[in-house]
Length: 102
Image 1 (cartoon, rainbow, N blue to C red):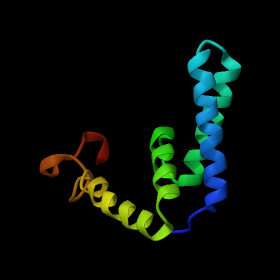
Image 2: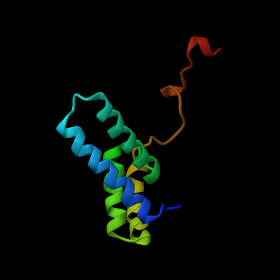
Image 3: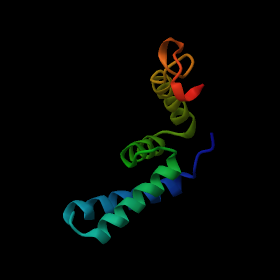
């Protein structure tokens, strides 16, 4: 897994946190909301996460530790996510076919 430069992570995390504060101060402003969401999206893309809050947490962990401890921690969390997938073949239970699938 490729990891971004710490300086870039720190910059994007700082930008996200700044827009988060502005967003909390004026939640009804659509321009502020757009900038906040854009900063969250950039952080998600940088950290490889789907949620801005998860990306911010991952960025903080990455900045606190080094690349190796961060990757170890990410690998420990990965089996939890893999366990949620269902095993076995896909399709209706019992081998039943729909009339459309003749």
